[in-house]
Amino acid sequence: MQHPYLGIILSHNLKWNAHIDYITAKASSTLGFLRRTLRGASTAIRAQAYTSIVRPKLEYASSVWDPHKRLHAQTNKQEDKIETVQKRAARFVTGDYRTTTGISQTIRNLGWPTLHQRRQHARLVLMYKAVNNMVAIPIHNILNRNSNIARGHHLRFTTIPCKT
Image 1 (cartoon, rainbow, N blue to C red):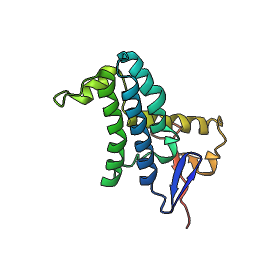
Image 2 (image 1 turned 30 degrees about the horizontal axis):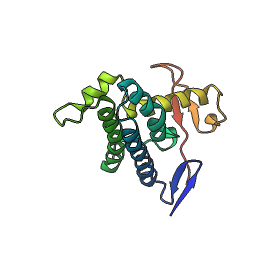
Image 3 (image 1 turned 120 degrees about the horizontal axis):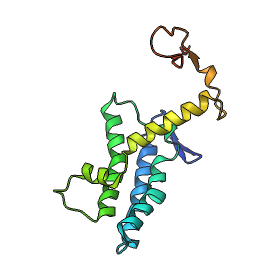
């Protein structure tokens, strides 16, 4: 059973497979539309179209659903599915569909960070905003500042154990 809520698909088992399938299908469809529409456009126009139309579909609310734990093979498959869209976009932008071309190097040449890096940055920005009371997230009910500052710095947090 799945429930769409504010652009995110919530499932009864609290896994994000359905949401990731949905956003990758939507982004792939949009990328296909751009390929058909911007056939003769310059590289800069195609790159701008990807970063402004397709990539936001892959990143919307990623701080909530990000498959950041690489403990399970299923999580790796989800992350690979998301990155595959960006790899296809890089081929679209450069116009280089040869299988002998290294796609990772192409993405670096375009100056694009990986989507994993962008999601990680979004999580860190959200954490910064929550700690500094810039968003309405009651972070102090969830995390405690670490009182043991013998090592490191005073901005470390410890999680409050959950009693279920």
